[in-house]
Image (cartoon, rainbow, N blue to C red; front, top):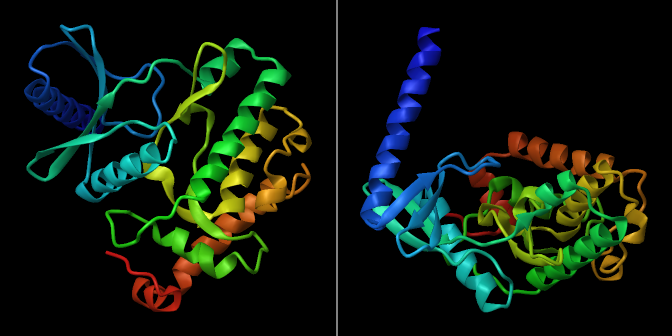
Length: 268
């Protein structure tokens, strides 16, 4: 009980500190709250100002913040709508800020009930956007944070016949997809998850969630010819789990220094 109280107390102290910092960025803020539907980003805040404008503030480490800033500019400049991020530095902590994107998440719409026709339209849009992202050239010398496990993907993509390595959003779950009033995709969230990865693996993960919701993924064929993703229901979960397992196994087998030499990729 004492330990739990200490954890809660520390968490409240951190939150109070974050709110203090946010008020330095937005001195005219009238309300600072946490998201109603929380994802994995626990240090996320919604800010309302006196001008009736809404912003998102997220506190993160420097490498993550700089990665997200780079990806934000890269995708928006190529016509992919994602948060338009700016950075504020506070000692060792960075604060990512961007205008709040109006709309409901796919997660919310699924909970409200949505027709098969609309869900298929959304996933087809999602695959088209993903394919456009995969065509964008990226530069490892820029502030792009590539997880070590993503680099292991290069070693295993041929083994699994999973196609090329390309820039991908690797976590296209329903909480990261913002829809407009007509249930068209307005924006994608969670720029932490955008980095070079097996394109097919990113698609398999998206298909796997659709499959969990009970939708027939065999009808979602817009980009299959481009990505060589197998559209069969059987094996989708197995493919994704196997791929994750192989990447983790590779990380255990090889040191980071050895992987850098094998993959010939510059890593900060």
